[in-house]
Image 1 (cartoon, rainbow, N blue to C red):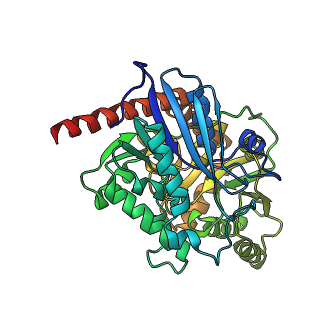
Image 2 (cartoon, rainbow, N blue to C red; image 1 turned 90 degrees about the horizontal axis):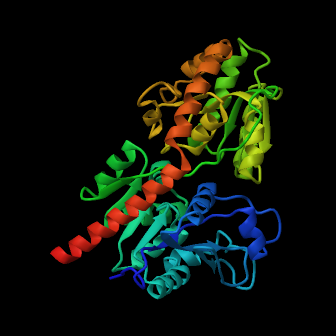
Length: 413
């Protein structure tokens, strides 16, 4: 069992996650314009650097490097593990399923060895849905483990999905939920879902970390609506495009900006749908912005943020919109209703109700004062609820509580 070192009052935590930012890209010598990944991890690391009660060991996979790298910055130690094709800066091609066949053995064995060497007080797995690194936790014993939930891949796809990689991700996620005891959640539905697999699981509440980008909220509006998220069917992008077609009957000049990454085949399908509905002049695809800050400066050019998602925890899209002062309309699903626990901060519509979605968009566009009132309430709520200092305090408290419970159970057993 792990214990504090040298009488110091510091927690020794291993964080298993994936992320990417400009500083890491430069440090690792990764060429090209690497996309920012999991920005909440980078923001959380900034908060941890400010503290003197924690020593953090970040273990992450990277395909864009030729060998493993390790370095440290203040109280954070980084272990960047090479994944993908040896001696190349690439992942294995989709048809070569070595990781699936081996259960991600080559990454997992390195994580297991690192954990043994570090001998932490606790391991925090951030994201059970990403099997290529989350599977490593299944081979580790003897340490308290907190699984922070980002989302559920098993809710995004059918269990008998024909894509073998998706099936593998679902299998790994389900094993983690069934076998682990401690979970970090940020919405009530997450707790209910986990307990359908694991009725004895214990929950610890947290929030992701969010950027407070300084933007000009009085900027001239170029778009009526903005959608910014990963672009795929379950995020409701097709519903939104069809909704714009309905709104166009009343507002011929309606303008939607779509921001985010999409599979090329699916993107072509969406553009065909736009053309079919005669929306070429009403919808613009802006693609993927390399940084959150650049994206946020584009988002505030819109009057309303719309996310008709079919399954989500508390989406970053919505929280970021609230923090930017852009009013939000979304589907009433997942953890999103929790945002209205005290007041209406987000306008909610039943899933799939395109006519109602169009009605709410038209009503809000026709009422600038309502836009101002909603955005003001939502921003005030988000600034208080999603304060990064409060979030890191909750996380450290969760670490302490999990360690204490784990030790008590060892004594009892």
